[in-house]
Each structure stands twice: as C-alpha cells, then as structure tokens.
Image: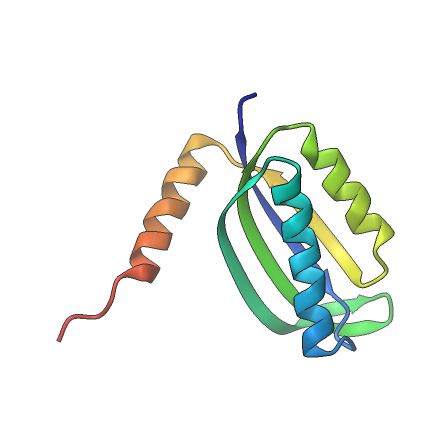
Length: 116
C-alpha cells in the first residue's frame, strides 16, 4: 500500500499536567505507528495563547507531526481526536511534493550545527 505524506496539528487542554500532555502525544503517535504510519518529524510548540477562546480556554499545548501513512488511517485519526476530551482542536493536512521538499529542507536546516 502506498504511503502519502500528511501533517497534523493538535491542541491539547492547557490544564493537563506535563505527564498527561506527554502521554496524550504518545497515544496519538502510537495510534499512527500501530496502523502502519511512519513519523517523519515531531515538533512540540508548547503552550501558546489563542487569538480567541476555544472551549472557554485562552491557551493550549500545540503539537505538530509530519508523517507518512496510508490514506485509510486519516479517518481513524480524526475520529480519535474527536473522542478524546483532552484535544481542543485538530487538523490533518495532506502534503503535496512541494510541501514535502520544503519541510525536508527545513528539517535539515534545523539539524545543522552552527560552525565556529
């Protein structure tokens, strides 16, 4: 089965402890890998303030995952986001080849060590 590139952003409730936040992120990563996905890059943005309130909250913990997965997995992932009350908002986006190229260049730039 062919794997497609996707990026997902999900925002967790800010009242969660650090351990609960890590457990929730690990839950979604495990869901992806157990269903045949390969996580390419993970980016934890941390606690960010919202421009407007979401479910009576003014901030949330952001996580971004770039992954490769079969298209059938996306519906399962979105269903799990809706079922989990710790998730305030989520978004899954399919990436085209240009976006993938850009992201790989960005990851390589982030991984470079500064030269003295």
